[in-house]
Length: 377
Image (cartoon, rainbow, N blue to C red; front, top):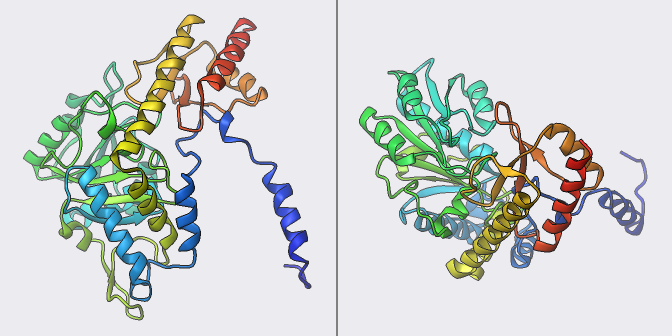
């Protein structure tokens, strides 16, 4: 730290110079986050100093969080769901599995997840001392049910399904997984960090949420397709007993017990989420998802015109393009300021997310550059 402070104008100049090094969202195909809705930004600023970790001091924003949980629960088929606004999918997944482990009371337990599961489940295995068993995928990149069956045993504390996988946007057969979990008395967790704000608005309907009685918990991220500010995740449980399994005593705060992973929690994220959900409503989110799906169809149609096929037909606004030498193609596209990512082996491909910050015009420019890059291989 410097000894003597510098004028605000100089600090702001340094910040502006640093901010200019960040890339522009209109060139991003690699991120599941996007520009927050303007009303979310305004709400975030209004509640910037509020702390949900000590809700008795901030009863107003604590009430907003309860309203957000109720709205998310209604969206996901359980208006009476309980939970809280987390920092994002990783925290939500950790907490869901922690609740399952605590409820099961099993030492040296395991969880069964699809091979397509987010890397947060590897962190979970390490943090919670659980074996992470990864089930194989079928040809459509959904989890293979027979592989799951072979991994479940008496020490399995949770079964996980993905509703919108990070790499392919694929939806696992949650209904079948929930049936298996219900028959075995195992906690069923659905990771819908990305898909939670997409699946309810697609023309194609899936059975994946709390409408399935055996689903115990769901991860959903408002700071992705929910257009909230970062960090705004969501963790929902069907029943309060799961949340109780996470509680610890908080002797010196205004509430005697706390279930969240972090102590201090930003009330701004809850306020931002509340604002954008109230402002847009179902109609607004429907328009946003329709727009992103239109972009997805436009990208796939354009890719096919230059001889590039998707690995699977997109389920949502996530596209994996099968190209030769994907690492080299990605490297060349990055030189042209296109920010794309790749999927893992054995299905290595270019991964593109079609978010609201993208446009048809930018997609056409991208495809032209992709065609040029491929022609030089």
